[in-house]
Amino acid sequence: MSAAPDAGALWFGQVATPIGAMILVTDAEDMLVASEYGDHQDRLHRLLGRRLGAFVLHPAGGPQRAAAALAAYFNGDLAAINGIPVRLNGSAFQNRAWTALRQIPPGRPASYGDQALRIGSPKAARAVGHANQSNPYNLVVPCHRVIGAGGALTGYAGGLDRKRWLLDHERRYAGL
Image (cartoon, rainbow, N blue to C red):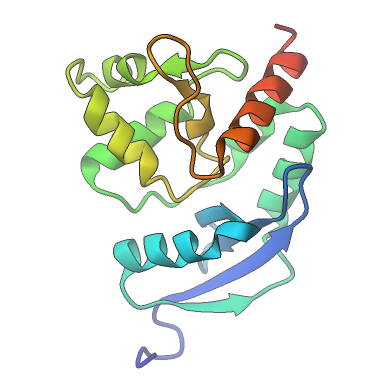
């Protein structure tokens, strides 16, 4: 790329999870810029390019703070992922929708309509769905907690099997 060495510089690491490898991308301030399953690297690059333009990924030992929080989450400390600092880089609406995702309690899925109400846009359930679909912070900004109005599992960038696993995991550790 033609960018200066430090312009657009991001660091990435990969951590193992019970549902597959997770790629964590951070900026120079150790803020999470993206997280994605290892088998969805093309989506990761596409979303980063849309939001940041030119970027350069540098391998790192793995973003330690985010990796430790993910390990704690998978060991039952469901609130651990809330401590991962995230650099929101979407539109104003997307950032509101993604912030609202972090407010959905683990083990208590919400509908797209619920999320729209939470951000003060009660008629924007469809737009919320589009924002969630563009969420570059898979798992950390928990769009897996959003389900259809009738309780049906709906799309998840990581796949419905992972979504089901995550919801079951959260129900189990939330005591529900």
